[in-house]
Length: 311
Image (cartoon, rainbow, N blue to C red):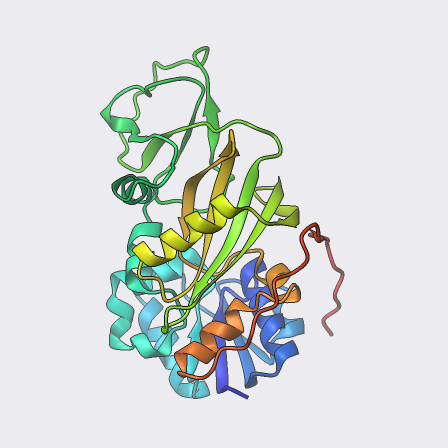
């Protein structure tokens, strides 16, 4: 057992549920507590107790969260939702940085802004799709992607072509145009972990999307991707776990997002031996991080629906 009581926020979402199940199965905490903005969710089946939380945008968010920490004597919080992570980052973790299990600040600073991500990659000579702020003018070529600079997930992403109606003026600084790296079977999502001692571990999935999330995938090895992931970890001075998304064109991996949080593939990865949640917890305590056996190339995984009953 590593911790007395661990609190997982967003416990009704896919990432929160996955983390909660990992913690319960691994028995690394005496109690696993959850909180979510909704009351009706499957977290009640997998967590010891669940509480109602304030939205990350609420002025009461900080007070309610810290009150729960005090009442339940929480000694570690694992935020699973990106809006909460952004609020925590913006408020300097309320002066309680040691209470939260997240990636380091530089990874969050870069990853939370997709335009800054592209600039970071450009500055270090790493392959990336061209990216421009939509309010600064028309895209440099078509087809291209229009998406939020700060949003998360793939649901709000749309492809623009020359035949689209451009009477609309993109005035929001939150919209960006990005190069479309085409190919139906060339999207990758990669887990990337770096310990405080500098050890770097990665796992590469070629994936298929379903509803904006990874629906299935296959474990692959690729020297170019592995080299790229290693460079990103070093340039971010990474400590903790992040998720890197890229597309392959002519053998070159182009990074289009760096997500500074645990991914929706976190339980897939854990089942394959890439236990980045547990490694991050061990590293936070300056304990020896468990060894890693790279999974067999060609191993496939599938996201399925599961029926659970709460009485």
